[in-house]
Length: 303
Image (cartoon, rainbow, N blue to C red; front, side):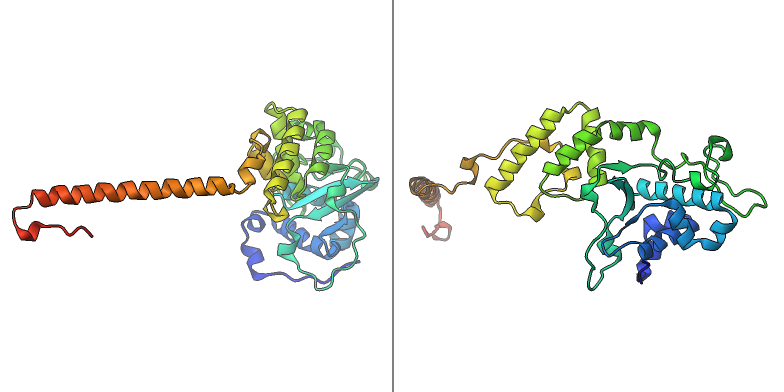
């Protein structure tokens, strides 16, 4: 069911929005209408195209479907929308939804949240999403990297891989998908899952083992609990991974416990002794200066 949404004036000057094509901007706003009160919606390029661009889709389903799929690839590149799979269904999550919309009375969610995803879908296309309307075969697409308007056609077509993440990048993240899902499920603050998945894959590619990441997280959780850290102060998982948090030293009880009475008295005594020594040195300097004074005006009072 489509919903009424509002558009802020600053939307049009956002760097990410200004970097999009006209079609991609319009589609992004259209997704707000299709999304629920949590920024989630069903990811079906054919249904999205039919809902938002009915006239164009009825005249040129192949071209519009290609534009929709390539737009999702661009949104993924800019961390604007994440497409994910849960129980044989595909969904999309508009990132930073609360900065776009703030529903007064959010309805009960019916679409599973991103943190329930079985895996993330990359590149804007899913198998079968384009087969229903003649398919987008390799030969039916323009050459990679063109992304130009065809003379006289009135339709904009793009190479599907022109702006999508590279196959190497997608395969690297997919290779660690199961490892990441298990690790992420144990992380106490679930935010920006897509960025976290990228950071996890990067850490694994650079040599961090699953054991190191898992044990490092367990160590961090013990430290956060010992420090009594509020959940809002725990770093986002991507930030923790990018900072190589698994290599941090664990907080010890001695570092969090207040000093004992004896230790407090000892520290007070040390400070008083230091202050007395400083005062003694000052008085000695004054006495020495007064001894060398040649006139009453040169005499320094002791206090």
